[in-house]
Amino acid sequence: TGSSDAEFNMRHDWNSLIGDHVSRVAARTKELYPIADVVADYIHDFAGIQIAAGTISFNVDVQRVLANVSGHPFQLRTSAGNAFCHIVVVATGFQSHVALPARMEALVEGYETLSTDTARFEGKHVVVLGGGNAAFETAESLTNEARVTVHHRHRELGWKVARRPKDANMGSKLNEYPGLGTRFAMMTHYVGDVR
Image 1 (spheres, rainbow, N blue to C red):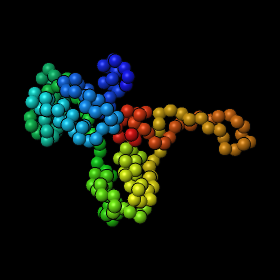
Image 2 (cartoon, helix red, strand yellow; image 1 turned 30 degrees about the horizontal axis):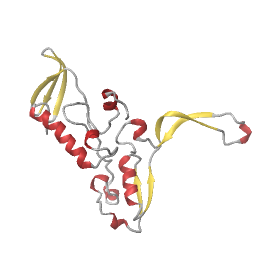
Image 3 (cartoon, rainbow, N blue to C red; image 1 turned 90 degrees about the horizontal axis):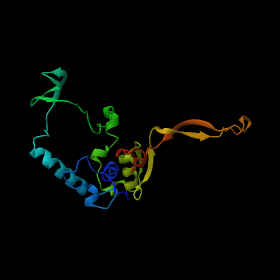
Image 4 (spheres, one colour; image 1 turned 120 degrees about the horizontal axis):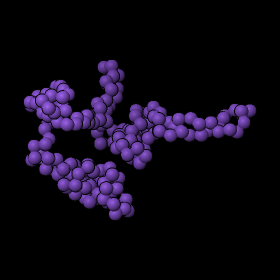
């Protein structure tokens, strides 16, 4: 970032989690978009300390969240027993793809199962459905092999855009409309948006 303020740098390092018990991704590589191995090693190091401390549980189903139990703000009933806490954060991660009718499901291939062998798409017309990082990453990887078309819904960008009326008889006054289009991670700081 060019800043010497550690808090500012942490808030603008979207490859790292909040914590200073392991060296951040920015200390491991100068790449803004590092290769997956760098991020995987970082997450392993980050979680390793918390696993050893017993603060992370894996493969545990939360069955119920109760408020104001036994003098604690929250009680979680889980498949591993009860847990008490002051704050509950729901961080469900990325959602699974939309299920299609069986006859259509056979016609599409999901990002999660897409092969990195792009040669099988040579000379074909490929339609990529989606407007996030995975969609544009897929389209980019196929451009040397196939004719690629990306289809996605317009998404609100969070700001207004000004346009002149198409009809010349309406004058030259600018009209404001909600901004719609592709959201970029540099604007939203959300890694699922286009990087």
